[in-house]
Amino acid sequence: MAAETALTAKVDGSAVAGLALAAAGSRHMFGVVGIPVTSLASRAAAAGVRFLAFRNEQSAGYAAAAYGFLTGTPGLLLTVSGPGCVHGLAGLSHATANAWPLLMVSGSCAQPDVGRGDFQELDQIAATKPFAKLAVKATAIADIPRLVFQALAATVAGRPGGCYLDIPSDVLHQTLTQSEADALIAAAAADSAASCSAPPKHKSLDEGIVKAAELLHRAERPLVVFGKGAAYARAEEAIQKLVDTTGIPFLPTPMGKGVVPDSHPLSATAARSLAIGQCDVALIVGARLNWLLHFGEPPKWSKDVKFILVDVDEDEIELRKPHLGLVGDAKRVVELLNREIKDQPFCLARSHPWVDAITKKSKDNVLKMEAQLAKDVVPFNFMTPLRIIRDAILAEGSPAPIVVSEGANTMDVGRAVLVQNEPRTRLDAGTWGTMGVGLGYCIAAAVAEPKRLVVAVEGDSGFGFSAMEVETLVRYQLPVVVIVFNNNGVYGGDRRSPEELTGPHKDDPAPTSFVPAAGYHKMMEAFGGKGYLAETPDELKSALSESFRVRKPAVINVIIDPYAGAESGRMQHKN
Image (cartoon, rainbow, N blue to C red; front, side, top):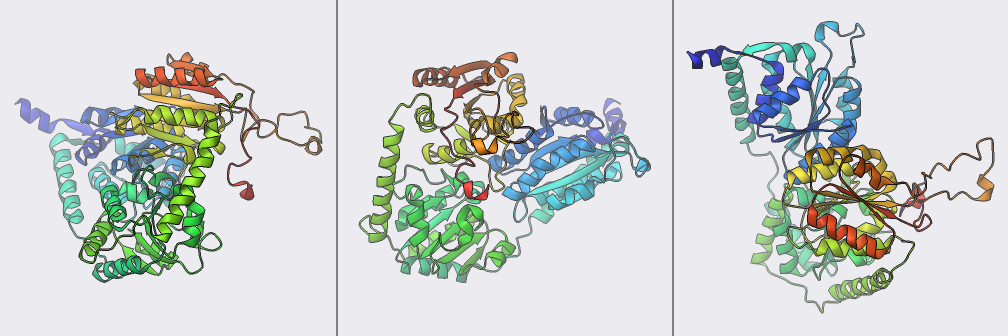
């Protein structure tokens, strides 16, 4: 009798959505609750999907995006209707720009009231379509399981990205029996499994792999470049084998750092200009020839360089028109390339002129940087605290902390100083150069990689976008240490020349300036976390030692000379 009652018990659309998400393998959801999705968050949690409640949908969206990158499974973002959906577009678009899988689920106004000015009414399908691979709406409760599985599958198909699922409030309140819901979910799971088992329709790689191996073998100055797409594909073992077997120098893009350890002797990071300016064959794996790689064009690259572009998306290869394009998953393609090279082996010796030139240039540049880093400059410049932070992170050993980095000078200088020796341990502003990602990234990293400490190195401007999420860190007691480089503003404090101090508002603060020496650490203390103020090397070392050991939410407020950095970091020419 009890079993019969359970089967005939009614469940609403919120419960069906939660059950479908859990059945599809989702384990975490990030978002902000309210009308009409509060019940959906609770039902999903009851079904086994942990819900992380944020203070702002943008931060929740950035968390869902980073979660997709770190786990290889779609991050989930839940928002309310109307303005909540609009705020969620930041995370949705960020995920798609970075090729990370994310599913944004939003409630929307009741269907019978569309066009009548209902509460938070918005055509959310039209709003999300420019940023999503797929945008679909459940018009009845029975649609929910099918669309959940369809949208989740679409996030990871081909080039990963964001998808959107709209569930109107009337659909969330419709009901089914538990047995009907179970049957719909089982059918959706079976259909999804059947469609996912079909092999992708790519051209044979055999001929291309042979050509790629020949190009690398014949090259006088070959280079391997890999990006966050290679990290996402878990291609680290295959790429390190390729580098070690062939002796070819390598260059990671910022979030590709750690796929092969930064400490590897063939790293060309410290000789980047030489490497890309003089290589004659460049194997590009999981990275796009966009602004981060100077579009693959002179004067940064040689006009004669031959690109071998490995990308999961054939359209990307058609767009870039490389010398040779290989369509496929980064890990699989490099494994095939390794197999081909094994049959026709070659290896550049350390005495090879190209390897020797890269090695010498790297050593020279590292020595110059280390000479700057060795000085204890007080008031702090960027180099001194970054050296102290680098050493503290390296002392943690393995599993290495995940480093979150954002800001203009903080991120740009940090990219050169901080060391990544394990894959997927650096998260930054990404392809879109998005500021405000920091605290969302931190929360995603802490739940996706619970055995790792998370260390955020934030400019005070970047921190300000998401600073209220320090309360979220405390609420969930996540092992996150946030280090704020406080230089009184965007790029620094008031940098206006006397000629600029004119007009009726000349006494206003500069557009780039904040309240000097703001007490950011006190924000964390207000919520029960630990705050530190660091103005000297000893104060910073002490704060890092204690916070890393305790592994509880902390903010370290590092006071930086407001004139230490450059406007726009390393992109002054674009401002």
